[in-house]
Image (cartoon, rainbow, N blue to C red; front, side, top):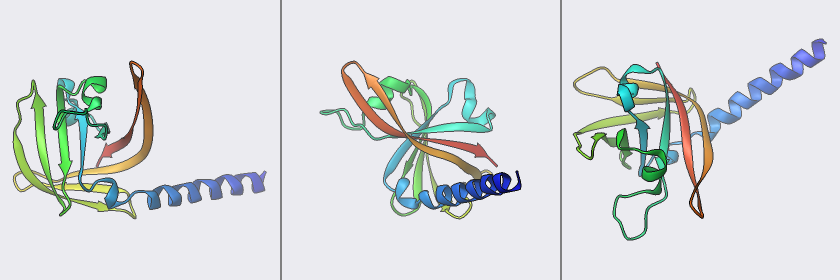
Amino acid sequence: MKIRLLNILILLLTSKLVFSQSISNKEFRKSEWFISNKDSVFFKSDTLKFIKYSNPIKGFNNLYEESDYFDDTESIILKFTQKKYLNFYDKKFHLYSLSLEKWNLNKKDSILKISNKKENDLVFKIIKIKKILYKKGQKEFETTEMLVVKK
């Protein structure tokens, strides 16, 4: 029984280590993510799912297949740039408000911090990043989903 508990403990510790190493800045650099904001869930909920835009619609600039599939008409969009800045959009019926923020990823602790000059920083603990598949008609797409908890 002791050996079994020890094996489970080792498995849990190594899985945490492997997960922590798998998160990197390149996951965010030059990417756009959105979070559903229906009923202001972004501001009210402690646990959120970020969806990465990664399947552009051919012939249309800045339109993605994820928009149709996940219905992002009421969402918060985080557009990460290469130099540790991001654009923050509040998208409601295609009206945008924009502010420039800094971001930092602490790979050791899986903490994503978004700095804001006017308000408190937003700090998220990344719980899980996974690839997800979805179908739209005859097409099948892959994107990334990230589960976070506000700290």
